[in-house]
Image 1 (cartoon, rainbow, N blue to C red):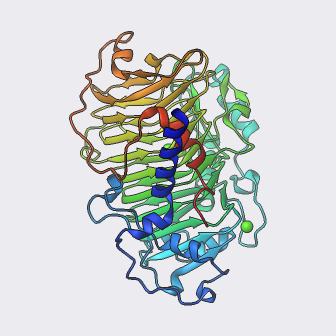
Image 2 (cartoon, rainbow, N blue to C red):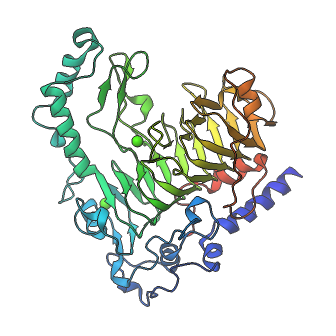
Image 3 (spheres, helix red, strand yellow):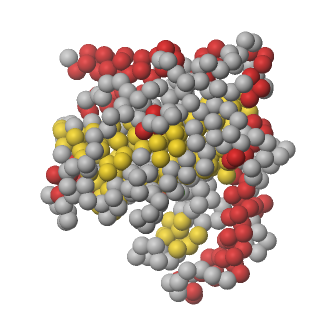
Amino acid sequence: MRRIAAGAALITLTLTATPAAAAAQPQAGTGAPALSSPTQERGAVLSPLARQLGRQALPAGDGWAAAGPGTTGGSAATADQVHVVSSRAELVAALGGDNATNAGNATPKIVYVKGTIDGFEDADGRLLDCTDLADPGYSLAGYLAAYDPAVWGRTAPSGPLEQARVRSVTNQTRHTQINVGPNTTLVGLRGARLTGLTLMIDRAPNVIVRNITFDDARDCFPAWSPTDGDTGNWNSQYDQISVRRSENVWIDHNTFTDGDNPDSAQPLYFGRPYQVHDGSLDITHTASLVTASWNRFDGRDKLMLIGSSNTVGPDVGRLNVTLHHNLFDGSLQRLPRVRFGQVDVYNNAYRLAGAGFEYAIGVGVQSAVYAENNHFTLGAGIDAADLLYDWGGTAVTTRGNWVTPARGLPRPVDLVAAYNAVHEPALSPDAGWTPTLRRGPVLPAPLVPLAVGPLAGADRLPL
Ligand code: CA
Ligand code: CA
């Protein structure tokens, strides 16, 4: 019985996840000039399936990114704005030509990523290292010697060495932060990988990112924050994708990983992990109308921040995000952590590791999370009461979620009741809204890991 039900669900999901099904829907952007010959693309010949994928818009009703004008990305690109890129220099050229001004390039464009592009490549394709990006006045050894709490005390670093670190960050940002403009679609060809870089979508509405593996957006110059937490923390600057001041953004079928540079392999300095990563997908600074679907997030500490400030100001009424059919695998916290936004979290699969786990869904200031039919596989020592965390919020709606404990059978769970049984103050079980922007059937939670496990992430779409 169970196998039959799971198989039927997989077939349904495969259909809804394929570009053929999506392309059958009437979509904005499909009136754009068709590419009559594969030789028209710059850089490589594209298969018909790849060309179809690049022309796709977000299907109607598919999450918050379908609100307002919807999300069409670069689907209306003319033939001369369809690019295939395989180096950092080609990527910057395709996005408009100058990384310093590309964020303002609103020409519709489709950019196919072929192979691996490393954010540390120079114009000739040579790989820079952290030393190349460092200001002459900065060294890690010098920084560790100067700001050791035993020497410096527990106040924020300041003075020439800290100033040299900040200049180094500016150097790195110019190089490894790749700025994307409005009306852009980025699509990975099979095996496409963006490593060591941040995709910055800032003041850039209408962007689509699909089928790309994001690997290790590392910070060469983490900052020591002695008053962050009880014992201080190292903090890093670079997300894998950062969405700011932008609307209508669709992040679909990507894989986010730290590859061979995981958080768990970082050294301890001043007794704290030397954190070279920030978020995988952070949505902040009044961004809104974002759908993140069918992505695979592999283990890291802080995964997804929605809203970065408790200030009751410009973020109010913004930060509306839909997360569906994502796999959160082995991450420790912020899955997501939410402030202000109406955030729909449905049909996601969580595989939560025991060691170091903090919480899954962070209920922050004025947040309104609606978490429905998610499945949580719990590592050793994780209890259903640990899945929510109160970051200053008051309410969260949770319905139809299931847990599979480390020892025990899968079972339905009332996440708010489990949380309230052991925490004060209690969270209200009504976040005050009901999502309407959903596409396709909402799966029963027990089927979610069976569907999301094999189908989420890069290299699952037919190409
Ligand atoms: Ca390359
Ligand atoms: Ca961040």
